Image (cartoon, rainbow, N blue to C red):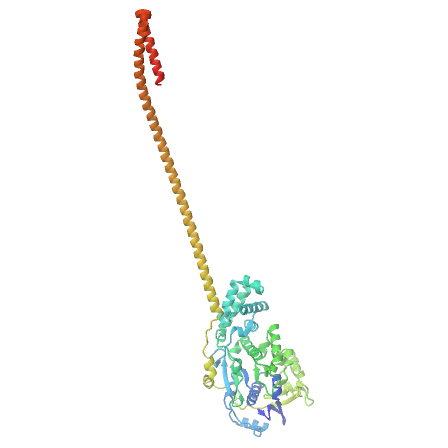
Length: 548
């Protein structure tokens, strides 16, 4: 309850124990075992901050915080509690609170979305349970996307980027460090698992504007409730998303120093989920945010079962502490109780460790920061009752509230953006076209070479046939020439032979006549005969020589 300008939590006897609004951004802790009253305390603080004009964000893990949107109901038990706390005199009234319901699965509230780029590689690595090497590679790929001005909006973009990295890992490694196909394949498996768990609905546009959380209605801060029933079944998604919201607040809001009251209060329920198996890089990021975000006017309140769930570096930043009962049935639980007790400034009126184990439902040990920022002495208190409805609102009431909001109209429909997936698809298409053109060029060159080779072969064959034909023709011509030559020679021989025979015969006749004439003169009849024979033979010999 907001009373006397303070966040009234409960009473230690007749003493009111309250958080000073100007110290509320120094963060806080609500701890205690299951069933000890943490949820009621959370509702009381939420109502008080809203009444003080401070917007609130919280995740409803079990579904029982939705009753903040409904007016509380009177009962004998409530009247008894009102009387014990003196709430009538303080102006207590049952009330509903300005409430907006959000849901990253786009079902039980206004769709709450972001982009892959906005989430960033560190939180995505936690979300996908990547090891350090895989997380480093994912960071390198985000750097490459920034350098190439590629928008990573949705899961399709991230998968396309990883596929591109898998196909071009050697070239990427030259500029961004060693990128292996095996690590990229492991990241892709993580993306597929993320997509199956609802990431395809969460990562898209329009991305959520964190400033839409920081609103007031009629002077009261709007209470933003994230439906965490399904979300909590995937602790990695739950913690990564809430860390994303914290990061957005830290990076978006300007510095305001120490304002009179917080600009916003952020409740991180089931905080142990955040720090389970957390990487060193992510733990350092959380520590940085917790240390510095108070200067942005934001107070973070972690809700968990045991203070030991939170690292000491973070726990040391939580100035306002509310500790409900813890049990000590084992030595480990005994040490946890002692650790919780030692975190308080002791009160001489009771033993803190003993008191933690004796607290009843609705009781808590409370220590807040005073005007000087010093933790007050721990007080054993009874926590106030809430003014809103104790149970959950039904789904119809919730739907009626969030569907009538202007933000529902703003965020209900996803928007398809021309981003990395589309760019890489175009690039792939261009590369495919170039590959096709290159293949066609190679095929054309091959065909031309084959045709040239075939032509050359055909030409060679034709030349061979031509030469063969020419050779055959030449041979035939030679054969014919030789035959003609032989025929001519034979003809000549025949002519010569005939001429020779005629000449020989003529020569013989002439020689015989001459021989007879000469022989007759010399030797008479005998000489005539002999002379005729000799000169006839001599004439034939001479003709034979001439016609040889």
